[in-house]
Image 1 (tube, helix red, strand yellow):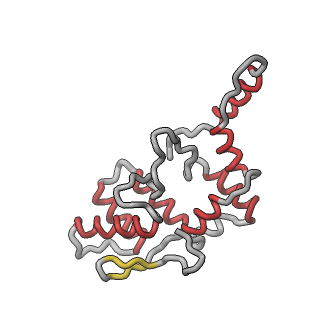
Image 2 (cartoon, helix red, strand yellow):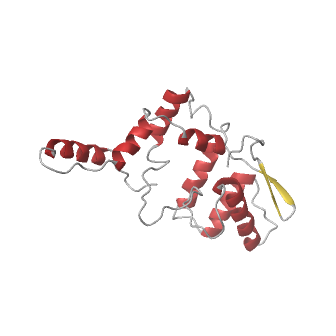
Image 3 (spheres, one colour):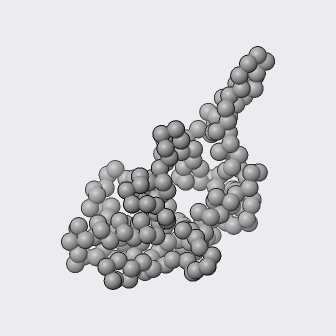
Length: 187
């Protein structure tokens, strides 16, 4: 989690051993992609995840130790403020309650996010690969203006269909927009 009183976290200590971290936003996004890959075994995901985050597969560790280190790094550095045993999504964010729906995807909405960062902040996310810290990225994403493309898409997804007489055209227009911007499920 971003805390303006302290430097950004680029190290984590687990069992008295300090690990240097690569928390560039694009590396974290690639990590999420890798973790969703159903062709990879859990063991492979742990080893690749460690390589991505700390540039080490911890070859002399038992797989249970690797799993613990990976989990602790993920929780401490990416999960950001999640309570123990609280369900989280792949990005480490608290899962929505039963009546909440996730209305965006970092992968599917990449073009809208890119355009919004350019428009609101003048930040080219492609040029920031390997540089922009994950915490900064999350803070900037959460601070996008109402006029940004990404926020507009989210508003369309959350729009309620009007009810009552005379709202047929408006309802059809909103349905069309919702269909155009719906998530396909490749979160």
